[in-house]
Image (cartoon, rainbow, N blue to C red; front, side, top):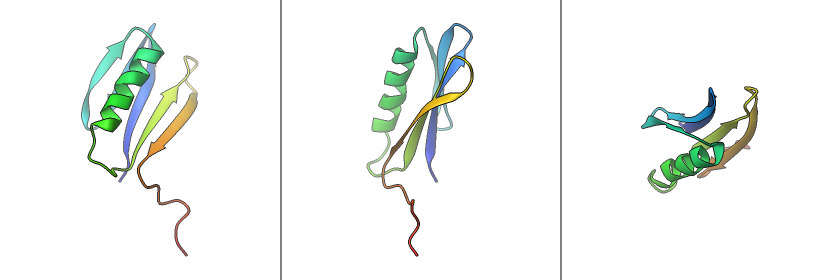
Length: 75
């Protein structure tokens, strides 16, 4: 199962949220992205993970996948 880390608009700040870590609030989106990347690098090698970055309008603007992505499936 993929570990997903979200960088979310949080009023005038940015929140990093994931199931396996404590939420953090940062002043800028760039700071929040750095925190999200640290969480990914802290996972065991080969762990399938993903960072989803939200725009301030609520839509997601970027998605980064780490580890061995099983897509396309074999067959």
